[in-house]
Amino acid sequence: MRTPRGDDESRPPMRPDPPARRRFLAAAGRALLGSLLVRAAPAVTTSESNAGVTLFLCGDVMTGRGIDQVLPHPGNPRLYEPYVRSALGYVELAEAATGPIQRPVDFSYPWGDALPELDRRRPAARIVNLETAVTTSESEWRGKGIHYRMHPANAPCLSAARIDCCSLANNHVLDWGVAGLKETLAVLHQAGIQTAGAGRNLAEAAAPAVFDLPSGGRLLVFAFGAGSAGVSPAWAATVDRPGVNVLDDFSPRAVRNIGRQIAGVKRGGDMVVASIHWGDNWGYEVPREQIEFAHGLIDAAGVDVVHGHSSHHPKAIEVHRDKLILYGCGDFINDYEGIGGHESYRADLTLMYFPTLDSTTGRLRQLSLTPMRIRHFRANRASVGDVRWLEAMLNREGRRFGSRFGAAPDGALAATWS
Ligand SMILES: [Zn+2]
Image (tube, rainbow, N blue to C red; front, side, top):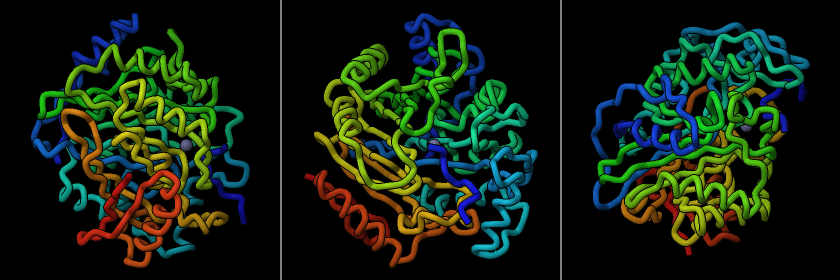
């Protein structure tokens, strides 16, 4: 049965740096600051040292639909999919596949074994692609087959993992219309979570999330959504329309535009993450245009990490001139457990990405990946056999890029590159 749709159609926290974001917005010719800029700064502690800055990155965090239904405050389960009319249908599918889920779960439940791993790693920033709106809006985007939403009262699910930054430049943030996007922004900011890649106008959508680093520099996270990942041109933010920071193409001109944008903000000691929702949901192919674009961002636009996502499973990793490129991080939380059709990709296996960057150059010093497996809507440590499967896949797909992976004593996969 292929009717249910899991497809996309197609430490310690750091201190936000509101003044830098304000300068960016001013430079972009807009002065619409509002609640984006007045969030209270969380307490600062650090994992950073001269050895480098460790980040946590992962791919799609889809806490809507079936996940929302098992959290403490499920929203209206009504769906507008061709065959499934209630989000509870996805809970039933998962339960049919792997057994009952005790409801309600607590807010931290979906993160499961990822939480102690985050505590152990102490990343300086936790950055995810949030693949859902956070809203009670009933204005579903007409003509779209899948609509994800999480009830705003379930936002503590993100706080439970102390997420610092959500990329919103994806093909679901406007599933519940402009009202849904605005509520998503407000709820996340109220929770002290910075966003990038969507906003109430183009200047906000294009502005980076900015964090002070204990090293004295800052972390800048820019986010972009591409048509190849199902981001509709109709969702593009404009000077006076809310929406997504849409990437028109992967041309040298686009690299130059992004380079200008980054140059207007980046200063010595800053590190730049480009978080990009691009490409197909399934398959290991990395298109030539993505490779050239990623290289261009590093060579000519001042990007230190390319954080690619949209694929439901992890893809190849490249280290280009000592800068990290994740072509597809794979999903991290979703409700696809009972949906068949792509088993060979093992999308139930996920990765927590922990790159350590040189705090002065942004160069990759170390990359460690912690494998997890989604089961009962929860991240669980992957078995030895599953870790071996991921290791073999990463080595197979990384061969053309010169990246290699091997098991480390802590159960993670450690990268080497040439
Ligand atoms: Zn997507």
